Amino acid sequence: MNSLARQIRLSCRAFPLFEVAGLVIQKPDRYDVTLRVIKGKDGKPQQPLLVCSLDDTVWLSEADALNHILSAHFDTFYSVEKMPTDPPKGTYTFVAQCGISGEVLGPPNYHGYQEKLRRIHADRFDRMPFEVYKSRVRIVKDEAVVKQWLESQSFRSEFTALNVPESTKFATREEVEAHFRETHLPVLVRSVDSLTLKRDNFAKLPQPLQALIRVSTDRERRFPIRVATALSNAFAQAGLQFFKRDKTIVHVAVARPHHLDLETQVVSDGVKAIIAFIQANPSTTRKALIDALAPLPAAVAPTAPAEAAPVVEGQPAAEAPAAPAPVTTTPERETVLTDLHWLLHQGHVIEFATGTIELAKKPAQKSESAAGGQAPAAGGQNQQGRQPRKDGKDANKDRRDRGPRPDRTPWSRKQGLLAVTTPGYPAYAAAPQLAGL
Image (cartoon, rainbow, N blue to C red; front, side, top):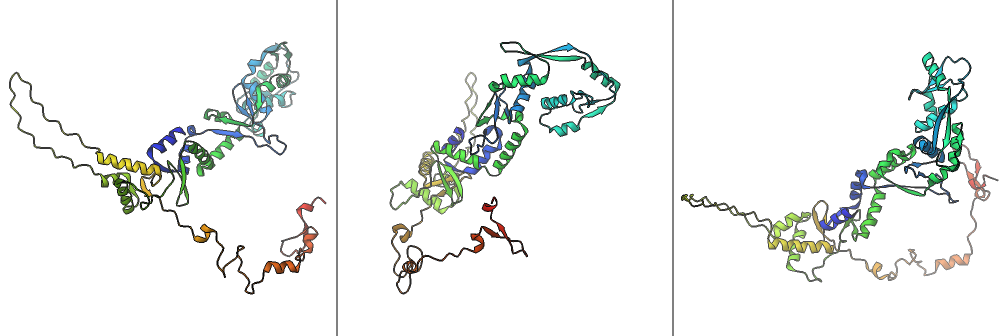
């Protein structure tokens, strides 16, 4: 923001506000994204926004946050120890296997199958709908795979809580989740009303938030109203001014257009020359104006080289005269630039981003009736915009004498009925406000 405001102030040009906003929205590193919750009438968020303090990740529910912490930071809170146990009894000829990771899930009729299926989905594939992940599971009848599952079931996991005053052991994953939800979750996960995100964290957001940011960014690229509003507030604090060119396009510049009346204000001859040139040459540029009012001197043609002087032994050779440096500016050009700089800062001259220069337009003269607010002459309209009566009587007085107007409300509307607009059915339907009666 400081760089944009400094560039506008130094260039003294007027830039379209929405084009500047379009430049900002082109690259993600030029703007931030802020998420804000919407609260209902009861003051509660319609959709909670939760932040994990361990890695600043954002979640939409406590269940999602809990699954993330237990999958990414499980070793911080619990230790796992494998204990030998009896393998499952019975004969198993096939097992289910994850079609994505290849992990063996066990027979579908085994009591721990559904639990393991949901745990793997929550830990690894939570962005995929559960039914879609479930459809990727395949049935394998390979004896080696079945034997592998039986060996894995010959051990059970025992969980021990860490970072707690009393060491507690748990036999199942459900007990671990219940303990974590009661002990650690309220401290690690907090609800926020708004959150400003860094670009690096966009990929870690839940899929609904990624879609929301993508849709909002695409809408802003088409019509950057939010960025333009933020720019206008920041530019106003930086001392820049706004105006509409031809009452259509909002521009930001160092000054608003302010007409310079040469008949009432005293200015220098250089300022008059600049204004006269711009009037005679509409849509001119700064270079054309300076070249016309203070042209550079003609380049001096190089003279023919003189005959080389004889070289005397023992004396240094004479150096050739250096070519004159090209003239890039003159005092007259500096004077024109100074006068033009003053005109731009006063708003008498506007230089647009395209390089064209225009004079500030003279304000339109207001009509006498609008300026003075006088009543119209006889025979004209009255203050209410109605033509007076020819007989000179007051129409409002006659209406008051007649008394209140009769009630012309249709009977159907009095009874709370609305006409049905379906052709061929001239019936009535109950009004919406009477639907509960």
